[in-house]
Length: 413
Image (cartoon, rainbow, N blue to C red; front, side, top):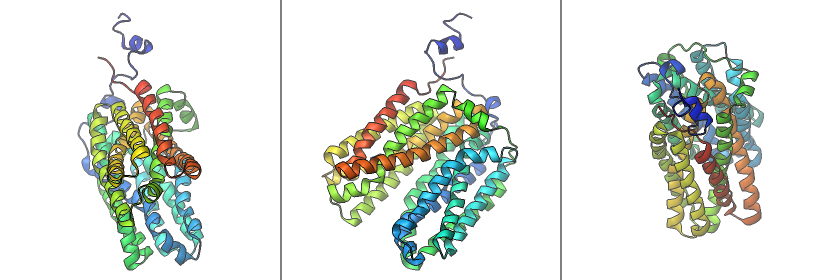
């Protein structure tokens, strides 16, 4: 075989960037899709993200009832994020000898207990314990969801399955905050956590029935995580996550001050625009899954390019209510390409250690969220409400260019 036709030689020459297409033997995927099991994972994601988002719409009532400041109550959100960042790479390591079905059921049980503790909390320490348990469940579930999806559907349907699982995020984004706020005003803030607890119990029952036995296949450990970081494709994926996701969250975290101070929207209009963002994300998730099914690189580049363009439009057009509302709604749609695109990229970059790679990806997401919030906050404090979009333009553009240049490409025959 000559250098002009040898795939290894082509890769060495830089003409292709990915390994040959995965087969069912490579991934352990079944010949037929187990969609009921995939649905149970989507329900798990919905329950986790709903519980994660609830404090944002209930914070004032929670602080008043627990006799603490709003800032102190807000640490319930911080605790979940920090614990989730640690749990994501740790849970696959600590549970590597256990059947993955059992592990997922254990994580959902933690979600049930977390909601029960939050609904009955009489002090801030109890609430923080509940949120720590949620962080463990959240990090563990996210780190293994892509690896399990690979084992539940044929490889050709993996991107579609991940898009379906991530629909739980979109539905929770649309529903959790407004429904939580309404329930909190009607029956008190604890009622929202009771409802989330009911959802988590239902999810546990569905997972118990639909998930097949999934004996451990990977053997993640600290050495494996270190080895994964030596792989160029994994390092590029994690760096792209840090840039793109930090830019997104820098822009979106501070989008409300922009709407209030620059666009001067009313509270009702702001609520409607944020709902539009959530609805856009719901449909964008499906579009992102369709793109990622053809090329995860294409999905991320398209999503990143649109987000960077929309952030730039906000920098010059945020005084217009119509321009701002349309840009934020389309931003939600474009963001839908990122979760499924990055999940597909990372597991295909390390199909032999998908759980460990998934843990690193989730940890990178959490670090990106924190760094975006910090970086965007510093700019907002120094230059005003347009600091968030400014950070987003720079970071998302860099991440998109990195993906365009070094992202995965289909292998040649």
